[in-house]
Length: 254
Ligand code: CA
Image 1 (cartoon, rainbow, N blue to C red):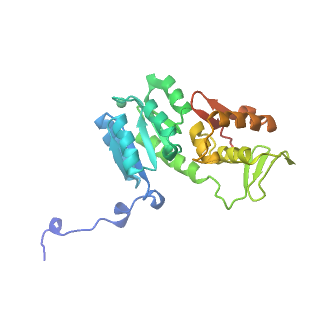
Image 2: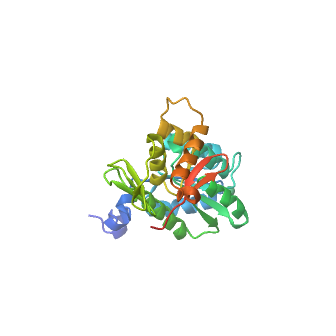
Image 3: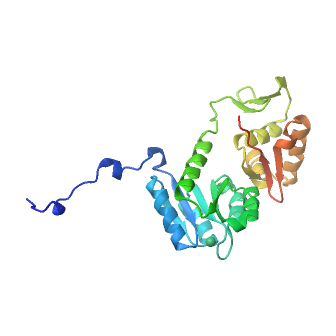
């Protein structure tokens, strides 16, 4: 029997070994950051919350890791060697498999105008350096929560102000008056309502609504968006065209 208490193997209390949040246990976060100190800090705090992490030090490596590791969320530094965070974001958004991958950008204060570009290109959120790790973790959790709120198919309705989409009846109404939509217009609107606040590229919309074997051009998407706006004028301001990329439905509070 060991005499010295230090020699006795002592299991850690469960609370220290089990991740703080069970729902975060299976989520994998990719950190793309070229500054080793910041990478280590982010990694430490993200793992402390029970998330698994993988990391990359360049944009190209980040893209490779996304393919290989299939993370649930990416923390993406803006200034990176080879290709920067904006380019990484752009490439992820224009690939159907990663078009909806949650992205949080890390930016320095001086890069705030780039941040706006990043958000336009489809980053979901951004955190300005120097940041407190707590803030970053809070943003990650908030983003996951927001994504989990997406109504599932069993829920029959999407609401957007006075606009209601009844999935079960395949009907759209505005202020309780039915607005007839074609099947493609309906599909397009459904995809936008399902992903408020996210940039959806023309390619992604084309593939989702028309299917991979469709031979039309991305202009088809523009034409249908225009028709949707004509039929539902309340969407005129709400559907934002994102330069050279696609469309985004503004997020609403309710
Ligand atoms: Ca950097």
